[in-house]
Length: 315
Image (cartoon, rainbow, N blue to C red; front, side):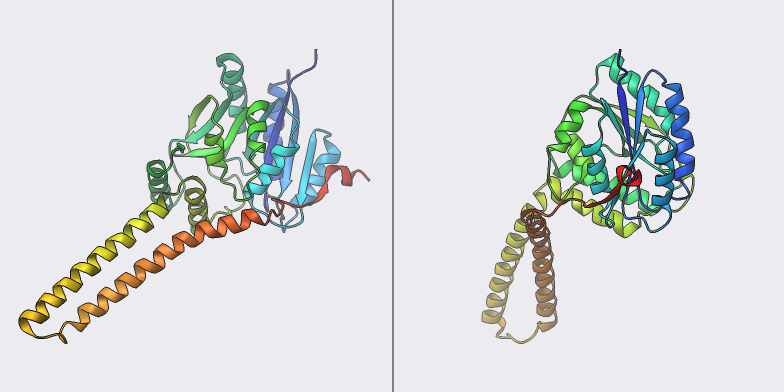
């Protein structure tokens, strides 16, 4: 009887320190789950260090190791999508090479799908130990905000680390949009998902590639991708400013008629002009974000470009 295949997709960007440690850990899990076949699919997202060299060596050492190397850095979202497209497994999981996604959870995740009938098993951190306090605060606020604005539920603390059936992955691959926000896409496709909770694990080696600014931009991506509420807010703010302006016009007219002093009060008028101008620029910025995403989608550029795979390494 043919064994079921599990594809493990690992996005890599400058992970030369973490890769050997990750490989050792995932091999231990593969030995533990010896009734399954494994495919280790690494996606090199334009790394500048020796990540690609390590992947070449691993692919020659272990035939289960496969890799995709991009022509440049396209971002983690593109790397995950490329891995999902190439994966051949009956079950597919996404992991980070820094071991913040504990490979030891994989047997439990597989057992949940097989025994309990779930289509997907996701993981979420119940603590943010080791993260800066400010970053943790804004992360929690982001999830509260987007869950109020979007019809798609985003789970606070959810990781990209999840085990999915082939049917779930095929549904995700069918979403060919250029501007990708995977946490939202996982929720969008639906299916029965069970969440496993664990305490935050710090990186085993190297440094995080996610600065506060990158996380902020990623949060904006998520909001723009899964809700149009900001456009409604912009409309409401515009109407509010219009009403305030009418009130002030009436106030100034009445004051002039009674006191005959149309000149005084210019500082307050200047403040009002600056305030209204700020509101206008803010609303234009919101509209601009949606127009920019539409512009990028209409160009139909590829989500990623592959420069090399393990097949090229065999030549």
